[in-house]
Length: 384
Image 1 (cartoon, rainbow, N blue to C red):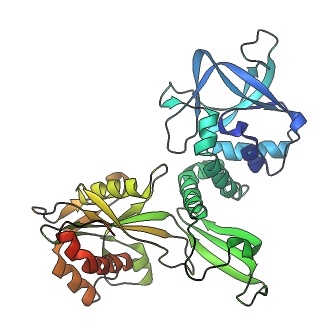
Image 2 (cartoon, rainbow, N blue to C red; image 1 turned 90 degrees about the vertical axis):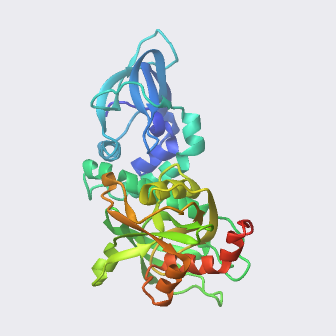
């Protein structure tokens, strides 16, 4: 097989080995430079795109001795970003005038014009390498199961699931009661993803340490794999009113509900590169057409940890609803059809008392508001 030149994120050897499914012999890897090109990045997945740029060069690595099966795996992964193998020439040293080396490398069909900002390996490794490694592990589980075109469609979902997994991994708070055992007390015997699209289903065979210290027998478990989400209850302490949104919810529909439209707080998935707080402000603008003045944390929790990975960051969002009336909102680009309702606090609690509030985060946020309403109306938002 021809020597392959890797630039951008795939010059990172741990990521390249993840895609290949095996380690590399260090003697097969050497530095190289492609003249007349530069790397820029302006998309949500932080993937650089090469552009023609006289006087610039792309630094990368040349790998020799890759097998045909390696190339098939690389074609699948890079096809997920719209790239395919092209012939090229590189130099073994920066700005060298010596003989070039013929290689193949992954390029898009058409080179775009420079846009976004210059991409650097150092910045990517600092900010996005862990995310890319996590996403690549899931992506390569679909090799031979789906096409590269289908992988391209799923990539944003894969990256969002990877981001959620990393938030969980980096939550290092020390429990104050129970929960002494760690993830390392679970032994994974097998792990498969029998279904994947917008959401996925993961299946595990595993053993775990029991409370008596013994290791359990083998058990089979499955989990619905979603995303991390923000949930915001907009509240105006001056007028003592809240805003709820209404939309068709397919969980209710699939269960057979006669009225599958749900009343709930503002909610949405956390986009890549966003903090939960940034997402909360954005989603409130999109779904309710209002601007929040302050966010107050209510809860960080799993709604159904027995079978779902979904994790909610729930906030109260202080705002002005004095002249706000019911209306329509939502992003057509996301097929959102949303109606919002402005209710008094008493009307909100009546929905809770009558069990008409069937959305769990809404009930939780309403009960939190009932407990904290007086201090919010007194202008004391601290100490949440």
